[in-house]
Image (tube, rainbow, N blue to C red; front, side, top):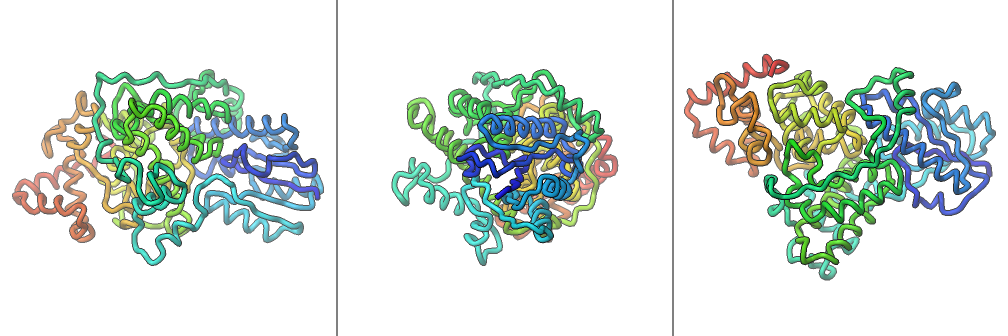
Length: 511
């Protein structure tokens, strides 16, 4: 049966059962379309990386005998819309069946479902064979619960896949979670590995994007593009991580340092999210290396990494499918402010934001604490509408696909879901920034001041946030101490802090 199979740009799974045998009756299609480049303003590196990885995947599969139709963005017969292109291909080549892998984004799932309802030929959907849980497995796991507790889900995943388990019920090392040991500020005496750089040449793709006038943000080195764009490169990056970064990963996973944007982080999220790597093989590689080097690598390092992959990653996807599309409308604090202009330029006198945003524009990368406690925390303190925060995060980071972005942003970072995925708002003052970074050292603002000239904006905005949201947060047991401190403040002192915050909010684009 002459069949057309659709692959989306994040479905580059070499191990998928579709590719176990070559079927001359099957033709695969991958397409670059304005529909995907233009729904938000993406980082130029994100668009280039997706297109380069897609082209590499198609080429590798063609070499092995699989038939591919590949539509480039500037092809004359490209209708720039997935359903429109599919209809044209079905008609042109007389396909008599259509198949696709279930998308991981809700909007694409709806689009393809609607497309199939109108098809006059048989169709079928398949699992992407990537995730460790089904779409609605977590929804069923927490059935009847008002909040999701990641820790209980994480433990169930450890048991289900026998990961770091002493026996069916007991974890290796006697504890499920070593997070308390993994929150250290960077020690400058520690040697940081030079990042693995692949030096991909992507000039042709970049010039095509420029020619077709796709609006993008950020910077790129087209002659030395260092993201992993193939299965082989992704495996090399995984090998580099376990051999050179894993031994300090947990210890410094929350640290932020101006001279080392990657520190000991893996940079595997892009390869994972487009499915060039499988989560189990990533986890097993880390555990295998740790087992061979337990004299040099503490269990806290590997457990922290495993938790990110089989804990947070699967947890956030589960929360996404359990709550979409309503999740994308949640705004617990009823924030309405626009995103400060410096989020698009990095031009601000606040050194922490200047560095985190500037790094994001240069590298399309920031690690989870930079996203959560710098750019995310400030947006929440500034009362930015979650829609604007979602749009920025979805566009600027190379690994951002809605299923993982929106739950981390609207849920974890902005607490816009009211506590479904996080037990408290993750906001911080200059004290946290100074504790975990070297950002405060050369800043225009003074980290020790709450008000007055050059007072750090984080300080006054922090207390302003808790003051204005007292009715919604005061009874939260995880932040009760904040209200104890707030209640002990002298009225005159609090008035000065709040006035300073109001002044900063009025001129936020000048900070």
